[in-house]
Amino acid sequence: MSTSAETQDNQRVDTCDLCVVGAGIAGLNALFVASRYLRRDQKIVLLDRRDRVGGMWVDTYEYVRLHQPHPMFTAGNIEWTLGREPSYLPTKTEVLDHFRHCLDVIRKQVTVDARFGWEFLSDKEFGSGPGAGVRITCRVPDGTERIIKAPRLIKAYGVRFRPNAPMKLSSTRVRSVSPDTCDVRRGDIRDSDAPVWIIGGGKTGMDTAHTLITAQTGREVNLVAGSGTYFSCRDKLFPTGIRRWGGGRSINAMAEEMCSRFDGTNEGEVADWFRREFGVWLTPQTGNFLFGVLSEAENATIAAGLREVLMDHLVDVVDRDGSTEMVLRSGARRQVEDDSWIVNCTGYLLEGDHSYEPYLSAGGSVLSIQPRSAALHLTSYSAYFLTHLFLMDKLGDLPLYEADLVELWQKHRAVAPYALFTLVQYNLGLIADTVPGKVFRECGLDFARWYPWYRRTAAGLHFMRTHRRQSEHLRRSLDTVRERFGVRCGPLIEGEARASAVAAG
Image (cartoon, rainbow, N blue to C red):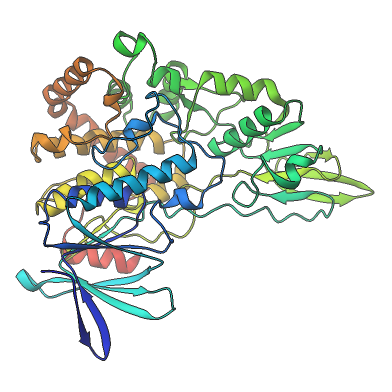
């Protein structure tokens, strides 16, 4: 089937062989995998509401940098063209340039009709058997609606990133901004010598603090760190120099040990172990962890450059009796200088309105990559592996576990990271027993690729030898999480039951 147009109920209907929604890292990995299954004379329609490829990287703050070494942040096994050392952390512009390069490479293998500025509205499965498919409703840039029909649909919109807005504060004597509305390297904030208060101790807060401290030596920068956060230490998980060849422990080895320790009830004990062995932090308390990565040098620079760290949560800034005060959740108040900058760096991952949707639809024609039915840890991995299974017609038969990360994060965020690692280990074992070895060999996302070939090979052989022995422990841990918190964490339910679960939210 080639892309064509037909008329139905006086409305133009386009047809294609596959429709992919989302042109970020997940959508690009879905496209890469599809290029391994579709012929050149078949066509993929790629939809994205933005005006270019890049997903959340189009919308995020200007001074963001990739937090992991760049070679494994890609589509499939497409290599970067930067010509920089593997440990280099690319800028936003460089990441977006690589995404464009990935799309160009994929287009050499399969026909991609990219429709930027097209907003996905809804989908509905129709028919059964060879004639089954999906009817996709979109809003085009002129505001009208269009229909696309395809045998299969991949919704690869991931976490649905929403830029942070400035905090709404009562005071008229402070300036409230966010990284997504104010580049802290430029403009009024750069020209001002007033203190900066960063609200939020996660990765955005660390990026903002590091940028301010290194760009303006001596600038007063303060942090309201909430419950505190610890990070994965880049130096330990991605060692450089000689340690890359023979030292350290790979992420694969770390994940295996973490999951062997975690039983679904002991997240505090596992957190203490992980923080001690692989963590880095600057606050005296570290109540949060969500896979952020930070180096020891970055951490030291931030710690040395901060004037004050408050372990509390900001509620408001108010003007009272001629002074300006921060009102904190603990009930404490802290006076701040007039004209201070309040930068909203509070978290946005796993926030917002995400309705439940199974990763595979009731009719089997729609694959959905999003956090309400996560099967792997990152949307890039999910798109890569689940698209293979989807196009092999094996996804519906494989008893992968799905986890509602949004609900688990809301109910008990301390357990979420360790449950997610367990989910990954369990599902990757099932996938490894199902797909050809080429699928893993072409997965350039694998963090084991940071290490030389002999370490990667040893890690792969170890996983294939041991994953079946570990699967029962992993499954019990996930079942325990489901029973403790009443969250969706188990095998994907069947057909009509899936449709009922979606209707129930």
